[in-house]
Image 1 (spheres, one colour):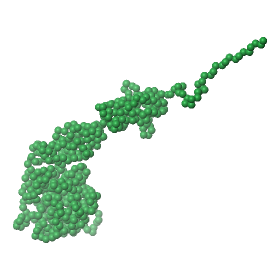
Image 2 (tube, rainbow, N blue to C red):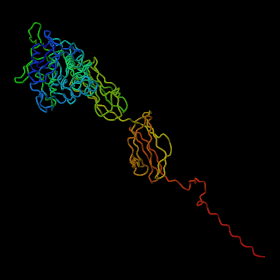
Image 3 (cartoon, rainbow, N blue to C red):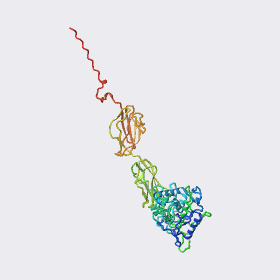
Image 4 (spheres, rainbow, N blue to C red):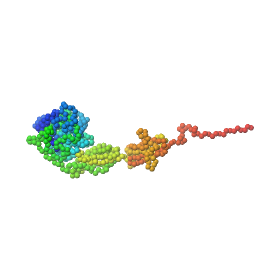
Length: 581
């Protein structure tokens, strides 16, 4: 509902002449006959338009009134295949089409009874913003510049006083409809959605806006496969029979077939342009190009007794610089650094300022953690939105480091605007220990080719406290002045049973303790060293002995003396015969 839209109507503007033009256009186009609940906003006509059952999502702001082309994408009775090429009007920009279909699927998962068709979202998106100005959105689906309707100050349009302090529409006096689906701020506050999962509810994002529109249309117990419910849903979006007919015509047109086109190449409504409309009034409607095949709109709203003349809206006052958001900047955030698992001592601060450099209050600022990190704000949130205070400043919640060490970025952006974000660099360092020691004093020995009977256990501390989750490296080292990994002596086994003499990826437990895997001796006897080093540089060296046992000193477990070890008894000299007498 941006004010520069050409060929638009306002609430109460549906005269009999306008209705006649719309119906004639539908008939001339050959579009399938839409089942309409008849009626008109003109009190002099009769009909049975159901009364709207919700406040208008758009505040009954103006809308784009051109009807579909005379030739539909796929005439009845020809092909059932969707067209690959065709009228520029039947093409829907890729991101916009994807958003409508995603919203249809999301609503179907939670409210299947509503039977929301994506073509209805496309029809509303067409008349509200020309499919987000022909698909001029970034990779995330956010418009390059906000799409804003005219100021709803009662001069030619509805009177809606400010409800968001200008957070979404930049006007702290009156409201304006915002985004590709043209929600007024008060409606967005109740119905806003996060359709693309980025943690934000941005009315200028087509995924967010399309899902919000889908849920709004499905309010209550509506079944949009029923003509009466569909009509009520559309009228709740804008209380106008002409609006209903226009949306209905595009709905039927898109149901006949459409095709995807690249973002930014869609047809833009005359006079809509490609930029934001913060400060301009609503221009006079521009005539349809000759030969366009589109009917001209009927007369505009009638003054009381004025015979159908169209009043020219007064230009919208330009917001004063003190109320115009110019930028969001870093408000003095210090170095962001923390150890894994700890909270960052520094809080992230941002400041919103106006075009004069002064503070701007109540500006919604969204802080988002980005990059390859498991850090998050308090409560595990990756994104939070907060309002600036009277000094224009806002402080993000406490940021907590995860277990992943490295650098990442936090981004702060004025929600719902295309202003450049503020980025903050943050660093997470691994958990550290400044001391590590064995938990016992056992002598560690093993025979050549055998396994050490005892397991090495150590405990790490940091500033005297338990150091949990600290990375430890264990290496068998040489006994040199500058030790290196030993290529002989004791060793570990990896998962495949292969010999390794360095282990990485070890971590202390919650109590700071670490038990090493089993250690094995090769066939070389001697005294060896095992060095354990923590993240932070703490080191302990453990002595390992590989020695053969002394068999001569080992008692026979049977208790029977070994014959081979018993000395042979000395022989007794033979007795000589005594001489005979």
